[in-house]
Image (cartoon, rainbow, N blue to C red; front, side, top):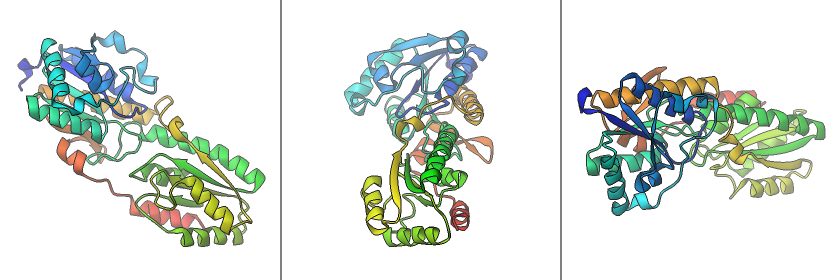
Length: 329
């Protein structure tokens, strides 16, 4: 679609919220104003598309949100959008508003819905990766990852204080059901003695051996970062019970950081990243692009086909694994 055919763009956030989504929305809205086209915010993701919950947004509507966590457009998971009837209704609502292109801020599930929608109705769709798990192919950083990382570091630093005071072993569970980027990076940054991630199943015997060596080396306290998708034990509490049973000399505690990792004011890195990707997403639509995601590769904003972003996998940094092993002595 050429520049003169794009008159109205819609933007929505979908899936789990991530710090920096508001900054991305702001960038989209103000880029539209810069290029003299209308921007509509869609509330509550794909469900809002189906229900026609749109609002035209101008530059002043997004003032002050660059520093806010979450998403002011709200987000929701929509079962209705998984049906053809739901998507038809969503398309009818877009047609009523004469919307020519759609920008989706979210993760792989959101991109999957957007890709199906684009193929069915030939509406241009651009994806902006927003998830704290950093598990989207085609970008080195997703919006929200850096902020979540800093939130985890801050929490673990506080836990370390009490672990040292009481000579305790803490299992700290962080988010990351399918990817261990958050656990690995925060574990190194917080000086964890051990890091358990989905990509590497070290097994219970090896974990016990490492903890015994830590004790023998003179460590009186210990922090183990556990990704929620870690493959040792059914969950972090079962893991804690196992270690306490086999290593009674340890006073074991569990801390599940949970959804606090999603919240908070976005870091400067996430604000800048979201701004860069938001501007580029609008420009890609104006240039006639569709079914691609904008991402950061070697600190340059690049595009990746949505299909590849969805089906691709992110690999764990082997060098970080090596560094973690060296520093845990």
